[in-house]
Image (cartoon, rainbow, N blue to C red; front, side, top):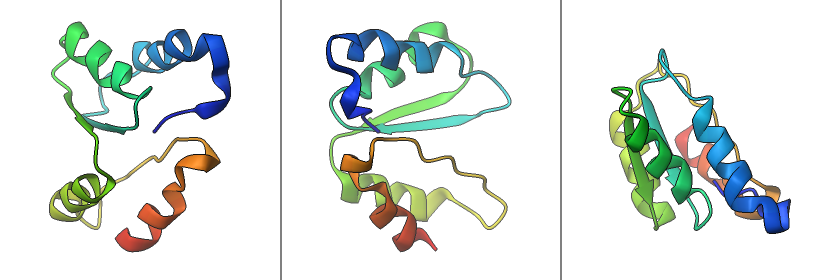
Length: 92
């Protein structure tokens, strides 16, 4: 999700997140206006990683509920203002 406190560095720093994502990570979902650059950058790198951007939290939640299994490891990263704890609670 968006990291909201980055100001003028937002685009560069969101892109830097994407630059370090590589296998064995196999799926990346982003949510939020600034986080879209993460998905775009991953797709450009063509690392055989599924990367999808969501503009709707409910759609993201539905996808995670559908695809996640008990053994799935999920890392949530976003600013507190994105309220991802609500998403985490629904997936428990």
